[in-house]
Image (cartoon, rainbow, N blue to C red; front, side, top):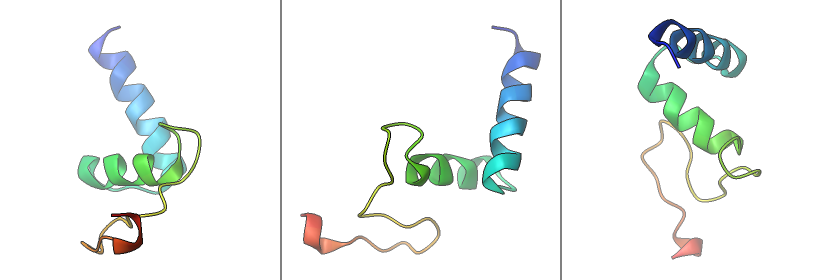
Length: 55
């Protein structure tokens, strides 16, 4: 896969999730469930908080 193709995919996902940085994009992608099929219940992007109910 070329660098340009990767950049295009990153831009599309970033636009779809409303991200303005790659760090935020990584967090939003994980939170959205795109990686595992469902949203992560124990983390919220940007809050720095962990839901201790899942420990």
